[in-house]
Image (cartoon, rainbow, N blue to C red; front, side, top):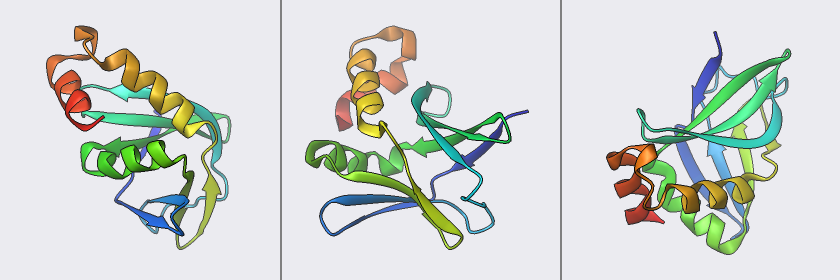
Amino acid sequence: MREKINVVSATIKNEKELYLKVNPEIKIEPLQPLGQMLVDSDETSFIYLLEKDDEYTYLGIKEEIWTLLKKGMEEKYTVYLTNDSGQCELSSFYDELEYLVENIKGNGNYGEEMVTKVEACF
């Protein structure tokens, strides 16, 4: 079974960095960013792929965080996964997000709710 962790909050620092925070019990050091994103239409979230011990870990980014994602995307902020155990940069984050957003707009294959919410935010 793939591990799934969720972003619990997001903050912008120095007007150039977006920090996606996860629960403190998550160990960030062994997580390797893969630079790929998926969509979870059932959970209305974006999924950034990480790898740990040759297995995928899904980083869920729910709708509550999207406003900051949009601002970061517009300003080309560097994106970091963070908590008290450390941080890592999430490579290709906005390239992937922009691609998904454009594919989702007007595309019923992602489900009506996902399309409506993405169109409203982005």
